[in-house]
Length: 269
Image 1 (cartoon, one colour):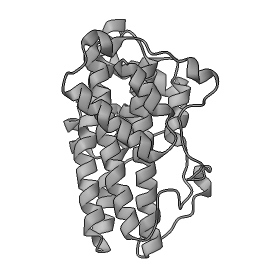
Image 2 (cartoon, one colour):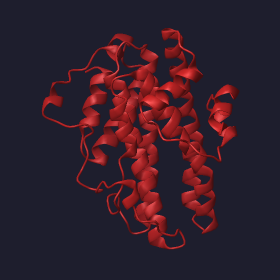
Image 3 (cartoon, rainbow, N blue to C red):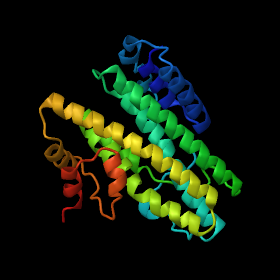
Image 4 (spheres, rainbow, N blue to C red):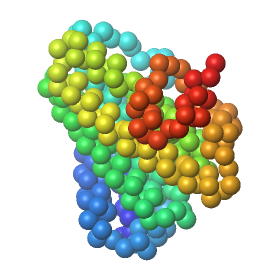
């Protein structure tokens, strides 16, 4: 079994438990260099996609449009649980996104696939931390509805790796760098110290994940002879990326590899 095949097989798994366990095993294998570069870059057999749908997922949580998600105050246990549930859903989607970029896109260096398998492993760990915290509140993953915005963008960018790198890790996931500190502070403000600590862990790791997206986006731009800033603007327009609004966590974005030209474009009116 090659690394990209294992990624596709894990992506097709339906339950969060199965998927996260599979990802943990694959990430450990890749990190331990137990597979050769040839085994890593080898194309997967995608025949199962004739009868199965990506990503594999269970019936719960119910998926609804974002506007249908109820807003609950975090001052209540239910409100905090709903918030933690939404974050857990994002992290599980991030597992799917990392697996998808590994199996789907060919002709990249072996380190590209190693990087994203490592990201998948960390996202699975984040999901586990959030789900455990959710359970201490008396709820389980699937108890609240969720939306599918992250995967919808993955589907729109399934035909072009440059678009995927520009609009998933560098746009939607980078948005988490802006959102995490206020959510952390909100949880801390209502006495949820464990939730705040988990958000701090996620923020630190996500800086590294966005940095991986930035590195490979720039690498691919160089391969294609493209300017990263103007190309990003064109891709955001073509693939209908959401317009990002401040405030922006500029310190975290700089740590994740965004340069001053990109930050200036981000803040332009």
